[in-house]
Structures are given as structure tokens and as C-alpha cells.
Length: 101
Image 1 (tube, rainbow, N blue to C red):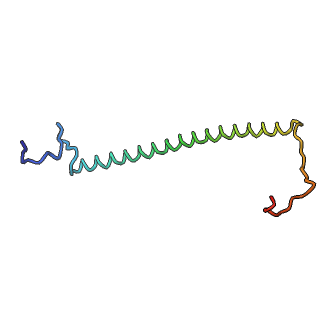
Image 2: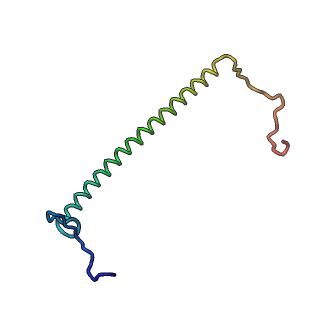
């Protein structure tokens, strides 16, 4: 069922170019593909960072706009003339003794 032969380490195509394995072409191909993969990963991370930054700006802008509207609403509520400023003064001041409270 098992052969004593080791599995082939290189694949040879019609023109005799070997892919994979310890040959110079395999090493060159590995370096080229690794460099391409690294560049693609770096570009993807830059694009992803830019998209997340833009989404964050939109969310912060939306929250700022809503808070601005709420601040204007509270200022308008205080200026309608119905607010009475007053101070409460007790005739007999309480002692500062906490046991009597």
C-alpha cells in the first residue's frame, strides 16, 4: 500500500520551470509573492483606517450637532420669563449638632 519512495518535492510544468522547493526560482517566487502580500496588507490597513476614521468623524459630528440642538433648547427654555429666582431663608437656623437631626 505504501511506496518506499518519498513524495515529489517539486512540480515541473511543460516548459521545465519548477515551482516550489529549494530552487532559485522557487525562492524568487516566494520573495516576490511575500512582498506583494505585504504591500496589499499595508494598503488594506491604510484604507481600513481611513474608513474607520471617517465613520468616527461622522458619529462625532452627529453627536455634536444633537448636543448643540439640546443646548439651544435649554437656553431657550430658561429665557421664557417663567423662571423665578429665589432664595430660601430659615427664620430659626438649625444647630450643627448631627445628633439632634
